[in-house]
Length: 73
Image (cartoon, helix red, strand yellow):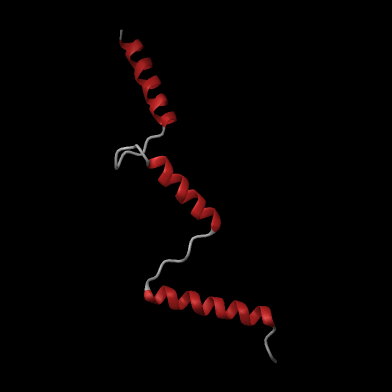
């Protein structure tokens, strides 16, 4: 019985994915993943390498430190 178009297309996609996996190529990013990566790159501008704190993380850290200091005194 001949395969319908969608089944053949799905089989071709699976075969292509398996071939690229064998070669070690990365799977292309989706549109959403590309947007996230772009935002991450833009957010990293001005931040030292290896330091991945946001402004909110820094503010939270400072708040915790100040509360801790107030408890000691």
